[in-house]
Length: 189
Image (cartoon, rainbow, N blue to C red; front, side, top):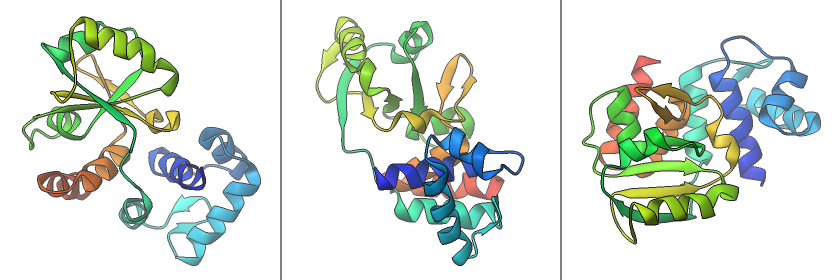
């Protein structure tokens, strides 16, 4: 959980337009105020923060990339027309990596659709995807991670997409051409 808490705090810091108080940061990151204060001190020592505002968004993002790990829990499916299925779905999700990058920046070929879901929705997602496709290696991968990963998500063309900082982190973790796409997105920040 320690890594999740740090990532929650970084996610909130990088998605906030205005400077937040420690209490606001604690509520939005769903962490204790004490945890927030300890982590902010650590970030200040590294000269990544001034109070609760990033000294440099890019450097703070690079730090996040350095501590983050790819989700280990996932399931794969082969689904015909997955984007249309997602647009009709009432379940909570957020696209990331190839498909999200293609919608936002149009650089990568969307060879696979990766989406974050809440662990509590896993049964519903499995049911939906097996009704409309097959279970096993395919074109859709559902990632089961901390629910806070959806903080800052937005809707584009009827599809829910992770925040830009989260997308950059996920693309960097994916490696290969995704890392190049992440660097291009980072330059736009």
